[in-house]
Length: 484
Image (cartoon, rainbow, N blue to C red; front, side, top):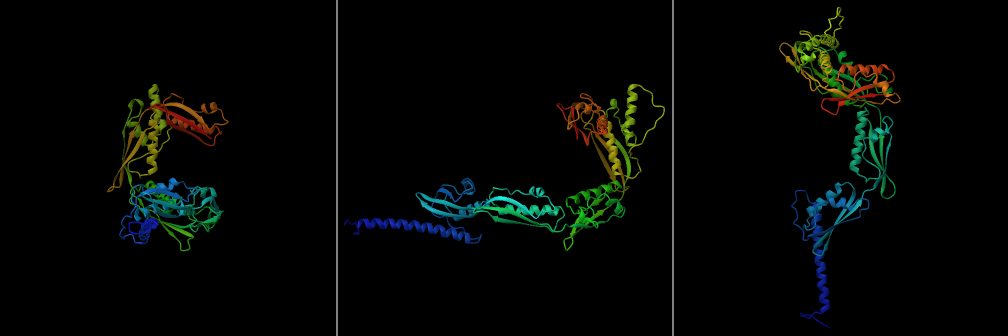
């Protein structure tokens, strides 16, 4: 028998050397796993272990069936050539779990020539076969499904399911069902598929029991309540939608209250965000609006400024006539008679329009009606995009409001194309003969309004809209006659 230099048998010595190499590899692997386990069990403030021996030579993913390997590798931050540490492995495990596609992930480190191989063994979550909604009676299923982003044939994601439960619940709250209960259940179908069922228990609708207005001493409740979108529930509210609480209407009601006060001349009125109280049994809502009224204002001086065009009759004097209550058509008739050299009418039967007069109570709608009349005068001369801004300067000592209408006339435009849509089976020519303005004419707002009125008088259409839009050039405006 052959022996080695130390007298031991040669082949046996070789076997012992192989055994030592294997034991050393096992010891390294065990050391890495122990450090990894300690890193997971230690608190976040614990000292980070020293890097384990070994450099990553390859990263493999096993166990995936529906999810592409690239999805896992994209979440893995450790790269070939880097040293393996428990911190890096913990980071990558958290990233893989965060994708939401896997129930379990097991990592193993295997020694290979020149380093180690990382293996991520994943257990996929089941796939969603079908999404159902059960128990909804008051809200249409299509409305509920608009809130969902869980789809069939996708991987089950519990976090997303919970988000969808909240969305359905919010929809019911928006519709006044504060007592609605929503839960998600999973029904197994085979080994790797589930049906997601959103179970809804609607319960009773919560209605508005009372709306309180606090601080309104100069404006009566009835002047405000008649315009509010939110209404109190009546004795038969369960038969319809009357008195149903809808949160999105509250901000509209807040603005409505401000507009009511503007109409009454209270320019300094403030309305706080509404306070909402839910009764202990969650059946009734109580709403409170706190109002700071301020003092009512009267009209001070009224003036116009900005872009005037004397040769077209767009003068400060004519604008002030409209401010004083003269109708736009009467001002335009005087301009036409002057241009044609015709004598003034023997008898005048003029009606008065909205006017702003010094010393009168400030009324918001009156100011905006005067503004609209000024826009009509300018738009009738081709300035379709005239912009008029009411500059209101308040004197809080005298409680007067000086108003200056600042006019920016914009570019003068002419009519380009006139398109007609929606006129089936009515012929185009039936619509076109009622339109009082032609392609190539200077734009005139009064003719556009008259055309709309004539089309409605035909009796053929439910709705008529003459919508302007930019044409081929900066001074061209196309019109689209949309009829229903």
